[in-house]
Amino acid sequence: SHGDEMFGYFDGSNDSLIMRIENNDFRLTQLSVYNSGKDWARLGRAVGQNYQIEVFRVFAGDDGEGIVRSTEVVDAFCAGLAQNRSITVFHSEGLEFTSGQIQIMRPFFSQNARLTEIKLKCSELECGDIRFLTEAIKERGKHA
Image (cartoon, rainbow, N blue to C red):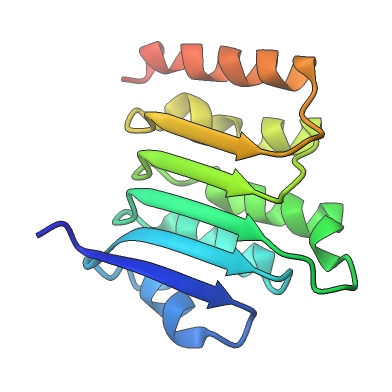
């Protein structure tokens, strides 16, 4: 079997979901998370250290306070995610990644040989970021 697909509404109070990620639950291979802006750092760290998740979709909501737009919080999420080497499909929607954050995630794009699909739905991505992303992905040949 291909494992569980989990759709989690992660608002910081959903401890069972984050604990399954942190504990590398072998059944958890596909993860879709809707996050309203709470505890991005913990989510990034948990996914970054997980080696079971193959499909990771993250949807950023806005809790009205704009917490999701805090650069430090998203930086921490990106730094955590950068450690992951098991994800094959990564979709992100609603997170406006800065150039700096794309660079923070570079190891994820350049050293994760399994990554075959990246979909970033954000309006702020600039040409330079896309070029950087392309270079990071091209680097993978050296790590495969």
